[in-house]
Length: 261
Ligand code: T3D
Image 1 (spheres, rainbow, N blue to C red):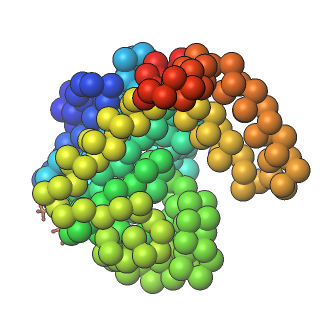
Image 2 (cartoon, protein in one colour):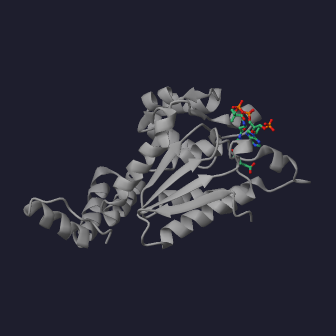
Image 3 (cartoon, helix red, strand yellow):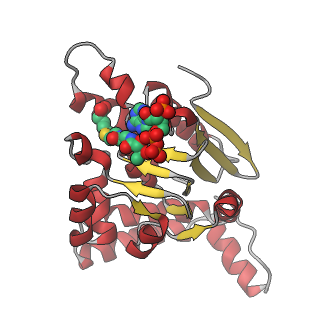
């Protein structure tokens, strides 16, 4: 595995993962997929890391599966198994990640690259970024969660149009549709995304983990079931050191110093 397909840097509670194949807009080959898995595992295991920032090197965020590398594989390949083994663990790891993930979409996010962007907890974009459900352009169907994320994020009408028409949409449209949280001038994106991740790294990390668990099951639950989920999660949150600190700080009229425990 190439060490450089995903750059890893941890500082101030934030691990920055930079997809690093700029010459192909960070298209996903085996090295980059392995690098993402390894980077997420490393950030998860490091107790000093309390937020992750995911971005791309160069002018793209991620152009999806590396079509040239795939075309170079001789003979038939088991695409379904490849998705299960190499892609799904990344999407699931992101959604089940016990710390927040901020995506800084610095350029085009296409195909599985758009799915990866949508799997982040907070999606920020540069004003020249774009989003493309590229799949039907090459006769494929959306994968890596796009048919799960999109209807929930933008509703059925827009989800169908995005995946069937495969029009590239601008960051401004993505903001209007609710695919991203904020759009920044291109030169402000990384500093703003880092500031967001640093802020989140100071927040109650265990509560974030529990929030992610609650949101993950909400769309499959009725209100009564979800109220029960919230009750269970609140019991866990209430037992954390950070909850005690939050209440103590409130009563003492000072800023809380959360430790992520
Ligand atoms: O196969 C499986 O394992 C299943 C998984 C499937 C998941 C998927 O993601 S399927 C979807 C795959 N992605 C695409 O279909 C997108 C293909 N790329 C594009 O449509 C365009 O490149 C973009 C719209 C993303 C950007 O266009 P543009 O004009 O800004 O850049 P460009 O000139 O097309 O690309 C720049 C370079 O990156 C270029 O190389 P070159 O000519 O300078 O040597 C281009 O070939 C390369 N590149 C871009 N995307 C990919 C890629 N190389 C390999 N794979 C790519 N996906």
